[in-house]
Image (cartoon, rainbow, N blue to C red; front, side, top):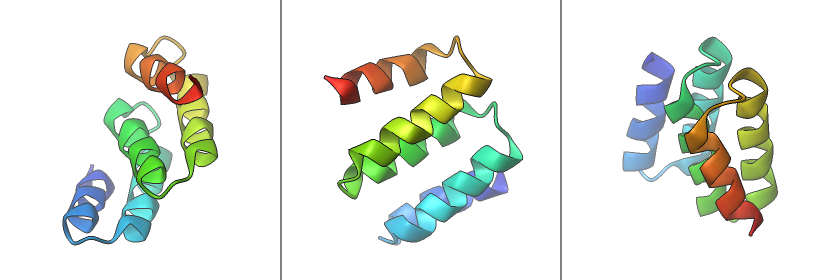
Length: 79
């Protein structure tokens, strides 16, 4: 949870790259934290990296195959 908060603090400070590191650490530490998967994907999208966003969401769906939020965001990106 601390890594997740650090990610949002990094975004607030305008440091998307540090946010990615923090959100990735949050996902590694707590693979079932849907908001961390979503925040990671959103940050990749903000950096113009849709393929990495898709990869992040697909990784989340391995752990959480029924997560509607992850499925919805993935569908939106793939359109």
